[in-house]
Length: 101
Image (tube, rainbow, N blue to C red; front, side, top):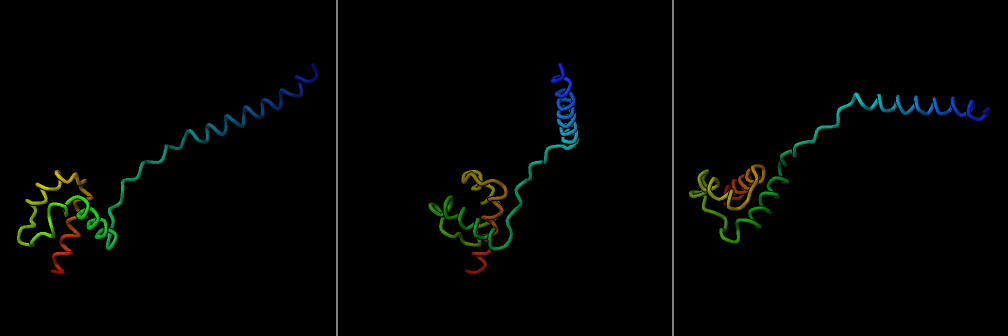
């Protein structure tokens, strides 16, 4: 009978510690998933070039600036399976590459 008396305070302390830990964690929401940040500068141009080479260049060379307007991208982006951020990267790459022509 003496053993149960000495175990009871230890069990109570463990139970209270577990309860305190759970109570402390319960008040904090799970961290929100971060949306991908758009790439900037050279990294964005590199991504645009890689996407253009893998999804566009097999049918199109570097387009003529006169025919590379919004309507062309509106028509071709879905066919190439480009997400909005990928489309923006391809547009940035094309703008940069065509400016060098």
